[in-house]
Image (tube, rainbow, N blue to C red):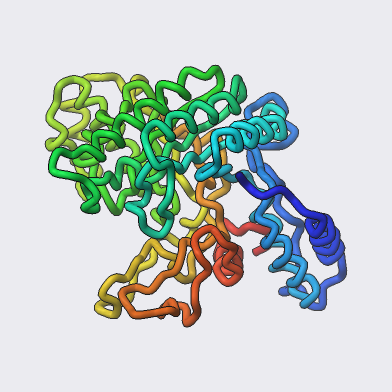
Length: 403
């Protein structure tokens, strides 16, 4: 569960507020007011759905307080604006009793706002890599999902169901046997979670597609079908990655069209790839997909760290660049919203918690330092001060007015 605020929070906020209102030495250094906590709020939005903002990682407030003490008022305000923006609540590794209690507490705190729950506990998650862990057995996972469902109850919720669960199945990473037992179990686990969560009154479930730089519609659509996409609201893309909003929405349309085409009996190998010219792909869809677009599956995207787009590693510098792992000089992306202007895209969200590390990035070197940063990266999920400042300073659009 997301950490609860500690007394230091109030101190950091008070100091930052005082700093923001203090006279600036120069116009270039003048701090701007912090961004509102929820981009979906406002006088005209009182009766519209709003996204929930959870309590932040306490280390973010510690960093903001230290920045204020150092006189870096604008950076402090940026960190606070970042963590006061709606973000996902991640659950994984808790016992069923713990996750039920914590989910119930979150929806109580949300008080009617829509909570984004990112569930991350499927057996064999992340191919037992940087974020390895999860339930030990299918039976354990089912009990855990049952507890999540009880905790959510009848509240408004978006469920991001198991990042990498379909884009990275056990057979992809040599974890399976010749019979495909673990991969079959993965599909059964995802299907069970849909069956348990999607029927909840206020809950919408979205399945994993990786991101546009990974799978094409032809390869991810069969996995979505096996994973139960027909029973879910839709799918998600770009979680913890850096692809642009344009790339994500185009990919979402292509995957949605391919799912519809497959539902008509079409061969997914014929579906347009994201590398096709858009005009050619649109012509193919118009000629081959008979299902009207209002019946296609919807999607949500992650814009938490895509303000500068993907990182392009220096050519030939690394044997394994790990372009997904704490890449340098990235920025926050567009603020979360439930009104995207795209009839297929239900939301743009901050699913990955910006400011939290992806793990120890060695990029094919012996380590222990990240050679791109010249330091040892924090372990996955820990607060990464240097990266947090990069995200704030390079945010696009800016996280603070006047940037």
